[in-house]
Image (tube, rainbow, N blue to C red; front, side, top):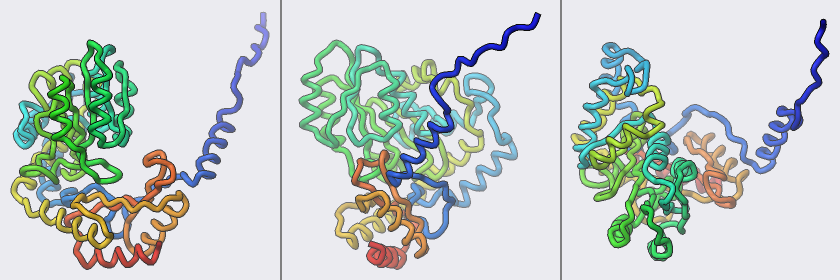
Length: 372
C-alpha cells in the first residue's frame, strides 16, 4: 500500500533570501570585504621583522618537510606529536623566561583555550574594551562572568575589582600592544593591582613578542599566562601560551582547542626555532623596525615607536576609497572597518616593517596627503 505523500514541515522562509538580505545590508553600510593577495609595498602585514621570507627559516622548513612530511596526521595527544614541537616549546620558554610553554596552531585557538579552560563558573573575567575578537569570544564561551572595563583605565579597573568581591577567582585580560591603535597597556600598574586584589593577569602579546622587551621577549613579566602569536613578528604561524609548568600541564589535559585539533605541520616547528635564533642573533632588526616606526610617526605628527600606526578616516566608504588610491600608488594598505573598530572610526591600519626605507616612507606620506 502506497504511503501518503508527507506534507512539508519547512518553516522560516528561504535561507537564500535571508542571506541576500544580509549581504545587501553589508553593502549598504559599506562593509563588504574582498579577498586580495599582496600587491605593492607592504604597509599592512604583521611581518614586522621581515622573517616570513628569511632564508634560514625557509631552508629549515623545507628540510623539515623532507624529513617529517607535510602533515602531522593527528592531534598531539594521538599520533601528531613530534620531537620538534617539544623542542621549540622549550626554546620559547627560555626566550620568554617562563617555566614552560605550549604551542597552538593559531593565536585564536590559544586565546580560546586559555579563557575556556581556566575561568570557572564562580569566577569573573575583567576584559579591556579594546581587546581582540579572540579574547572577547573566549570570554563569552567561558563559564565565568565577564566585566568589560574602559580601555587602559587603571582607576576604573580598580573600582570594578573592589566591587566584585565574590568567592571566585578574578582574571584581568588585556593585550600588551593593542592591534588597532598600537598603544601599550599599563602592565606594571595592572600587575600591582592584581597582586593587591588576588587577581591573575593574562596578557595577549601578539603585537609585542619579537619586537619589545629584553631580547624581543615581549612586555609581559610576572603574569599568570601570556599568549604569544608566532605568525606576526616571528614570521611563521601559530601561538605559544607561556607560564608555569602547572598551568601548561593543565592546558594539555583540559584545553579543548588543543585536545581536539590536529597538530600543525611538523615543519612549522623547525621554522619557528630558526625564527627564535634570528631574533636573538640579529637585534638590529628590532632596532631598525622601531626607528622606522618613529620616523613615520613623526612625519604624521604622532609620538611613540609602535609599528602599528592608525590613520583614522571616519566613514567606511571614504576609508576604502583612500586605501584604493594608495594601492594604485603602489602601497599595500587596507581599510579597517566595523566591527573590527568602532562605528565612525574606519581607518587605515598602517603596519611598519623593518625593511622599509625612509625614502619609501616619505613617498607614502606624500601619497597619503594626496589621497586625503
